[in-house]
Length: 46
Image 1 (cartoon, helix red, strand yellow):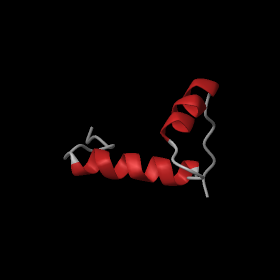
Image 2 (image 1 turned 180 degrees about the vertical axis):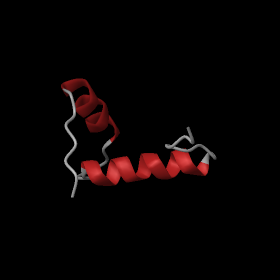
Image 3 (image 1 turned 45 degrees about the vertical axis):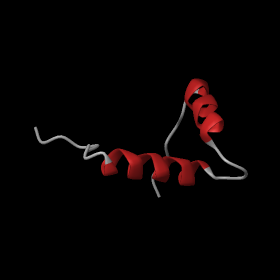
Image 4 (image 1 turned 120 degrees about the vertical axis):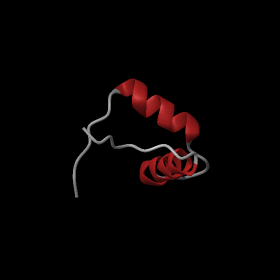
């Protein structure tokens, strides 16, 4: 499993999005799903 380091501002922003006891993994997965549902992609072909 890769490790990701987040700065304090990013953690605060994720905390603001969390509902109940949602994990950071759940929040990030939901954000990625929304992003992809909008037809956007996280990767570019270079």
